[in-house]
Amino acid sequence: MIQKGLLRMIVPCWRPSLEEDGARRVGEASGRVEGLMWYKDLGNHAWGQFSMAVIQANSTLEDQSQLESGFLSSNKSGPQGTFVGIYDGHGGPEASRFVNDNLFSNLQRFASEHRSVSEHVIRKAFLATEENFLSVVKKQWLTKPQIASAGTCCLVGVVCNGLLYTANVGDSRLVLGKLERATREVIAVQLSTEHNASIESVRQELKTTHPHDPQIVVLRHKVWRVKGLIQVSRSIGDAYLKKPEFNREPLLPKFRLPDPEFLKPILSPDPSISVLKLRPEDQFLIFASDGLWEHLSNQEAVDIVGNNPRRGIARKLIEAALQEAAKKREVRFADLKKIERGVRRHFHDDISVVVVFLDHSQLKNGTSPRRSNISVTPNF
Image 1 (cartoon, rainbow, N blue to C red):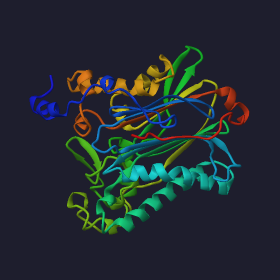
Image 2: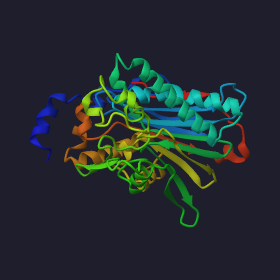
Image 3: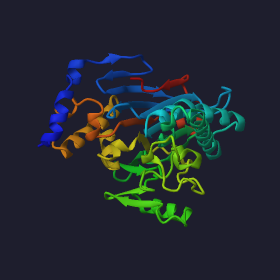
Image 4: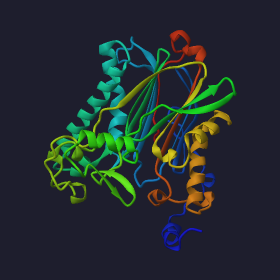
């Protein structure tokens, strides 16, 4: 069973069960809160329905997420569709919160300028958000230097005109549930490209782009890390690994590199982008931070969604991941749910999940969305 030392640390942090806490309603757009979980069990977006949930593990929630549906351009006369963002922060919540507040509006601005959504528009939105955040870091550098070590993974999906655009920096993941007509089984298809040093191709990419740095990836405690510091090779933020001016005092020594004057950015904000023409066999999309995928395989997650009612399915995915996390640490699931934030991070990460169901009668031939604008962001 659970180690005695860890148990002594956890016992003072027991809290009443979620059932005893009861649910606190925080508005139709925002969903409900139970203990450390926020959820919206079922809602409507432009092209179907969605379910959304977040569980907090860190002392301060570093995950952010959003669903925006309706107009995708700021002038309200351009393309319409559904935008989903999963932002898994690290080194603090500042970067993920900033992206949550600014990325979609940047996309709307560029979609208005170009009168469309495209790979080019999405890339410009990512890079503008990066530039905007680094400007904030520069302004706050002397009074809040730790913001230079804040960064975030960023996974975005945009459904527009019968197409799905997927853009990603970091290691959050988008998985499609696709119906195989021959077998009638729903299979998992991963749509996002991940940027984590644990992946051989990512390590090779880093070595190719930094040929004169033999320490660009380092194996430390059986984990590959970029410069021995961070697992992801692409992100928004992490200014201390992109601009030498932030790789010095007053930033804490544990974040600083031995060579403060690196010649080129170590991490990249440039997203991997793909475009998929949606077909009737494409049933649903699972967007989630890596906290979910640490405990569930792509197919396990798709099976859960495919074999259960839509209502509450995002919560069900998180609960399945927590069941696995409890099992790995030899803790009862009922006890895991009582552990307070902060201490909970010893068992699992913050986890954000958005499940988007696709209504192909609406997607067909680019039919206009049947619903007005909707904006949903978890709010604890």
